[in-house]
Length: 241
Image (spheres, rainbow, N blue to C red):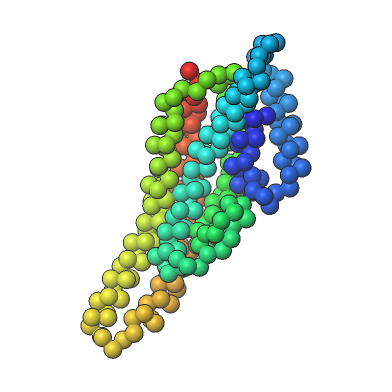
């Protein structure tokens, strides 16, 4: 149950506050029982409470690790939207995201919802639960963490910026070209108010290019998602000593 709770906190929509708690608890209990009947490990009869608590936290961290790494592509897409929105002039145009409980830019929110749409259409949540269920075969319920895995995870999480830049670079490159063009125009025609012309131009052209770039995000999203899925399947056995 601790592993399923850790994973459930990070699944889009399901882990947010907007989703009712009763279905969350019911689904977690059902999945935990289905896995529990296939586990042969048992606790010793006489163990201190601290030992049980440590094992609960360890299994909870396994679910958190699987959830964070699997959601890496979605976080990258959100970062790409934040970066694109900044280039388009929406740096101060923020709205509240109830799932993340924070304010993010409009384009970042749009990118986040687009990523969630792709995630559920291609059954990303099923892949996450399947990977968690398979983890019981590779990482026993009673285990101790290998100290080297946290460094490996931190290096892997740093890829969120690399993947995010890959999503954002086509549009950002065009926006930089537009700004350079406006700078040249302002030098050639000093009488022209570049600010009054440039901001609507950046927004209009930015949204047109964004509509085209989004069409390529689906394939890139799935490619990155399944690469991380394959990496995580090989990484899970390294969690326990």
